[in-house]
Image (tube, rainbow, N blue to C red; front, top):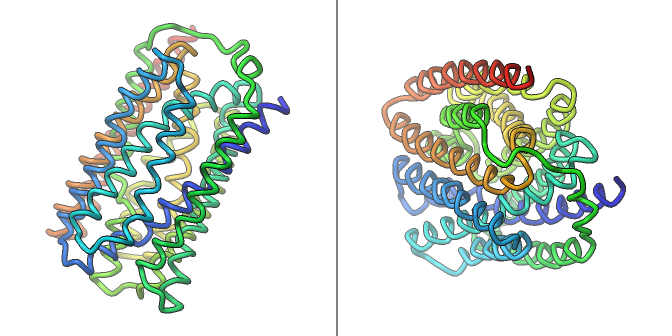
Length: 379
């Protein structure tokens, strides 16, 4: 238990430092690209494409991890690709910036199934909801610090480029910490007793369908940042600060959702389709601050409970493959949602809100089917 907790904490610090880099960039990338004159649909397409490739490639990364057992090699390579973010500082072309954004997302595709599989083995001993909640909470500390770097960079008159250059520092410490985590990892300690079905059952595929629809209707922060910029809702330096606040809520949400998962299981996910359209309505029309904070709360559930659910619905031999499938499916949803929401935003914010509501109702229905299938499976 103690070794497993230490491993979860170390990997949480690795994710924390990684998030300082790429979440810091995500907090301003919409506003930054607006200075290049890109349109909302261009932004939505590129961000969505990055997420599609990121999540889509995970099905292959997960399969490779299960077949080869090279969890650590894939984890190291994926985290190393985060260095593409600070490299943005050296280029003036939005096309190159687009490419670097996509490269970072591909790195996430490589590392996520392998890393989450290692975490799932460890968290079997401490409660998966709690373990993934702790990891996500630490992860989101970095998601708070990263946007604050840009807040101070812009506030002090340093600008976007200088903010990207500062991100080299946490990137270096991230790889050093990852190496320490590997050295302290004891495979026999975390693998023992974590066996299960060697195939992915019907309930798993229902869960996958639910996750797709759950993410389709969530308006991402990149588009919200674009909205805040072009509509002059907030000043440039306040946009990353608002994102930092949302990530702080994300961390709290992850811990609470993780504890709830260990008590009631996947039932706690019913909040996701209920709150998603409310976040869109508040962010785009009624109360932007409340809407973005609610966005952070929803994201915390996505990143903790949804991951914990996969570990409950798959055996150890298929774990990385299951994570790859989950993330690929979410990528399809994120791409479709990002592009369609960007398209609808150019029509009206009301159209975005209606889209979020319709997809969330469908997601809620699929979750009910998933829960019913789980009850049948136990019987």
